[in-house]
Amino acid sequence: MAIVIHLDELLHARRMTLTELSDRVDITLANLSILKTGKAKAIRFSTLEAICTALECQPGDLLAFDPSQPSQEK
Amino acid sequence: MAHRPDVLALTRSVLRGLVVLNALYALAIALLLVATLIAPDLLFRALVGLKGAGSWELHAALRAVVLIGIVGAYVVHRVLRELQAIADTVRDGDPFVADNARRLQAVAWWVLAGEGLRLVVGTIAWSVTRYVQPLQMHIGFSLAPWLTVLLLFVLARVFDEGTRMRADLEGTV
Image: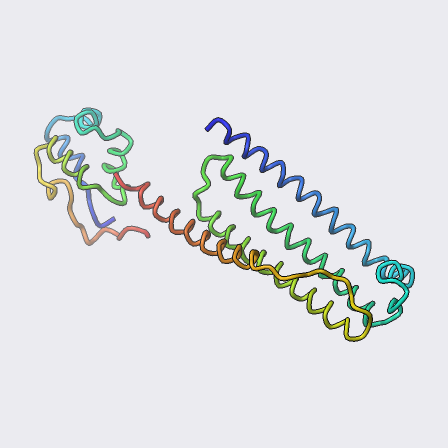
C-alpha cells in the first residue's frame, strides 16, 4: 500500500513495546499489529489521536505516502 | 437468545424435509408423465372424464403441464438448496458474506421463474378450453409472489452492500 506506517520506528525511538502502547491507548494488540504491519484499510481519527497522544508525535510522523509502493487492493 | 439455535435447527430440518418431499413430488409427476405415454386413454379418462378425454389438444396440454410440473419441482429444489446454504452459513456463525447476497439473488430469479411457469400453465389451460370442455385448473393470480421477488432482489442488494461495509470495517483500526 502507498500509505506507509512508521509505528515500529516511533516505538523503537521511545523504547516502547506494542503491548505497552496497547495498554496506553486502549486498542487491542491485534488491531495495533494490523496497523503496524500495514494491513489496515483505514484508521479512525480517535485511534490516530490516541496513538499521537501516547507517542507524543504528529500524524505525519506516523503516516507517510510512498508513491513507489503498489496501491491498495479494493 | 437461547432459543435461536433451536429455531435454526428446526429451519434446517424443515428445509431437509421439504427437499425430500419435493423430490417425491417430482418423482410422482415423472411417473404421471410416463403413464400418459403408456396408458393415455385410461389416464386421461380418469383425469378429465369421458367428455373431451380423446382430444389430442387436451392430451398435449396435460402432458405439457406435467412437464412444466417437473421443471417447477427443479425450480423449488434450487430455491430450497440456496436456502439450505444460507442456513448453513448462519449455523457456522458468518452469514454476512458475498455468497449469501448472490444466493438471495438466485432465489429471487428462481421464484420469478416459478411464477413464469405458473403463467405458462395458466395460458395452456386457457388455450385448451377453446377446443375441449373447460379444464379445471385453478391457477389464479396473486400479487404476493411478485412482491416477494421484488423484496428478494432488494434484500440481496442490501445484503451485498452490508457485506461490503463489513469488509471495510474489518480493516479499520
